[in-house]
Image 1 (cartoon, helix red, strand yellow):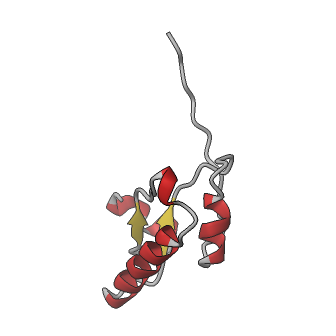
Image 2 (tube, one colour):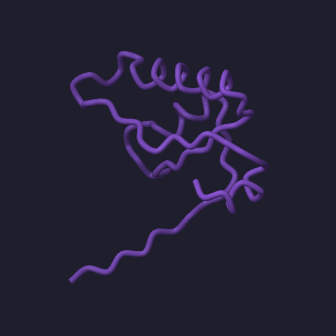
Image 3 (cartoon, rainbow, N blue to C red):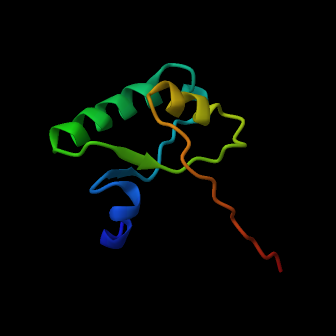
Length: 84
């Protein structure tokens, strides 16, 4: 993330850009295990929080997974799309 975002997010933070598990491998705890590892690594690097973006309407249950790992919703974003 850009340095100018750090004050808005409470200081330096880890940003999780993408989490994905192939459809046939879902339900095995892979995303949870991967994220837990990443969060431990961020903490070990001296960061005290992590940020990620999620499609709250996703049918995969991603929002629930992130919340079960301690992430909380702090704001909502809107995406604008123009189709041609």
